[in-house]
Length: 264
Length: 371
Image (tube, one colour):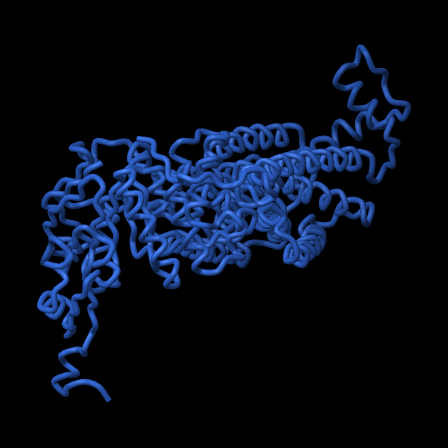
């Protein structure tokens, strides 16, 4: 699956959240969206998922405009993991993951659906939670249920909005490695908004850096995640340490504080 | 475009296997619905046999059977049984059952669509709007004192209550377009409710004593308006809308995961919300038009059912219907028999019975997952 967006703009009333953004996500590719809060990462992802409607521009999946697709069709192609979801106390974990099969189910739940649910739960390591209610889970467990639901959807493109939210270090790495595996082995691409620049560097093939709704830099992680770009976009001085297997991006201090104008 | 995620299959057949858990859960849920249906049937028989005139179960059975198939079954021994059971008790039982079912389903669907546990026909302003319509009809109408209580419903009151009930949801739609944030929709409903309540207060303040009494009784709600016409009408609307809403079960399930996820799962949020809320309003308005304001059952039945059967609307909606019917029918039966020949307003009894049952479930529910 290849996703392509050309000159996409999204407006919330008078505020332009996404401004003439063009980029593509190719088969088997993991693309990280980075940028400060309010830079339009979530809005961009929602536009691709069909949750917000772009005011102009074109989004296509394998060359087909998403506006020409029926909702169920789009639901089978795109799996979206939001930043947060409301709690449904009296739904069990299986019920919650099973929702991912909604685009395929008319009424009854087949054995095939349950087998897919089981695989998705196994992939997230949450089989032991199957009979529990959502209200009984911890924040991290809930996040894994939500990701398992997107897996059960069997989409051709994953959209993750801060998938590592609420997860401890081990689970952050597990989730990103799972995305990596799906991309490498099955060729299913993923677009993910990430705050952690080190994780973005380590797990993505390309990085798109946004600021105020516009693409400010895009390309290989080592070209985009530079001290210079980060200072310009985030307004934070960082030191970048390259070593054999990757890169550390360590914040030094905000320029305002460094100049003696902020702080206590 | 199908893809497989896992290379290593998990061990099958253990107790935590979701496959096994899901299906045994499904069987339990269907069993639970069956038990509720059986309880409801017993409640119907019980309600048919108790009352000011005590009748034996045989008389009740023969009365119904004779009315349905006079060529096979003879008339009951007690001469009055036929008239009492078929003309008085049966319509009242049917109206109470279907009104309870309809209010409970309306509540379940409204709570599901708006993802808020406090929503019911009461909180969304529907009851207040219907009350205002009824009060307007009582004040402006010919004012036949007691027309409400002898069975021949004042058609004007019914029509006005129904029309204003529907109008309340159309007003909410006009203000919010249903695609807004669900709390905006709820607030719009609450505010409209206050405005219609103010209207009722104005009418109460301006009118004379006799009409004031009529308005007050309508606001208390009850099965006084039961006759075959009203019972059949409410039954038809309830069954039809119940089917249509149950068909939307998966959309309602998806909505419980949030608007954004539901949209990603292929649900047209604005349209689904409008469709479900309008149908729920239709069923609640059509029953309130005959029964007056009946609160509680629409709020509580769905909660009780969520605790015992979970949030899957394929089971939750039918379960709520049966639970609502059971609660309202039992409450109404107690209300009319507890102080014979006094007929208590059903609300008083229902709040006590239903409330105690709900508190019991909250305490129990904490200990088990009730899969």
